[in-house]
Image: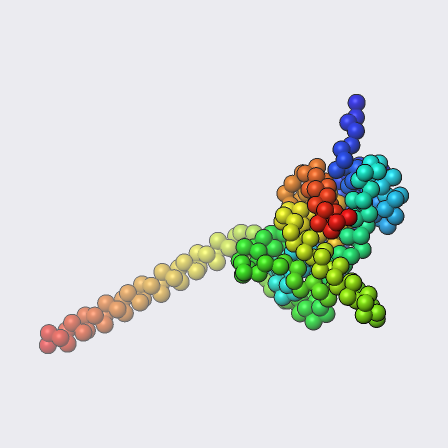
Length: 189
Length: 123
């Protein structure tokens, strides 16, 4: 990506296509895509579900569904990763519909994400920062939280996020703008 | 005449720069972001640093790899049927014939038992 590109044009160059073609010819080659995208898909599921077990379950369903459907993937404007994250998004929607509605803090399990440090005062400060960020993210509407996670955790483009969420890339940019403004207020920046 | 990019589009270009590793100041300038919105670009850089993608547990990774390999080796009945529609018709016909035969035999056996019991009752 370069700063002066036309937004959303990156999908015309999908670096995954050779590996996707290989996986379509021989499903054993799907292992390369699995290794490449396990952590990003798991991270997406974890940030949205806030629980390692639920995230593993959603990740597993995502990859099994993707392997089952890999022959039907067509390079028609959407990148492979936006297609894969779309599957993950559907699995997340199912998980969120069926999960225990009593759970209110979707990032409660994210404490271990705080960077390690030997200085106790620094650790306290980092933990406090992480808690504030979790609380701010949790208070965003679901579509804004999805955009923030897909953009900043997984590095998807606005166009790719549009494919995942079923929105136009313009709508995703507006959601991103509003999410950042809201987070700035919540984090008092 | 090209339309000038909206504030959301300019911010998105700056975020692209952040994701490419530019500093917030340079990314904001490259995106053409207004000075008033520079704190949003700095926040974007902060989010990129702080929202660490958590790695999947190695045990989970290994377990899922095994499941994927098993799913890969399992035959897909739908794909097989689509590749061999003739065999699907023959299989369906044979399956139906066997089903009809088994059902007819069961009905015949039942009727024999019923008539036997009927004879015993009226002996």
